[in-house]
Image 1: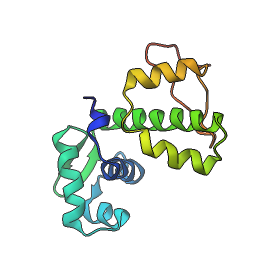
Image 2: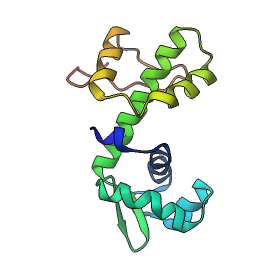
Image 3: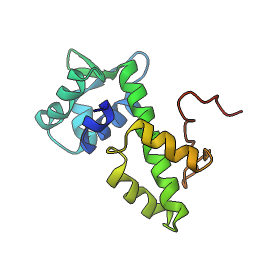
Image 4: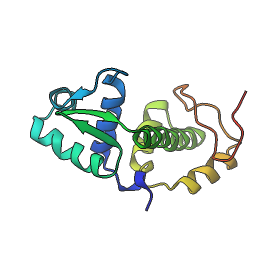
Length: 143
């Protein structure tokens, strides 16, 4: 099972929060993660602990930051989500509907499946919201 398929929706949200808040010189305090998740620190910690065990975040003195593996996992999650959104848009879903529908399946899709879907759609450059879709693995970057 791929790392992405092991994550819960809340754990992905936690990765997104850390990515949005951390800076090169500042990690993210537990209190900030809890506040952004709208939970108490012990609940936030229950999302951070498995992420640390998977090597997606590093924690030191109560502060968290993404590891390189965490960053690449987040990039892959966004790719899965955006490819799924593109497919739902093709069958007539509104941009808001595409996001909701994509969230139902994006964590379940394997990388190979997403690559095949992306190729079958002609490597769409963006999702319905205009966000870029990372090219398939082993394929040269777009100009």
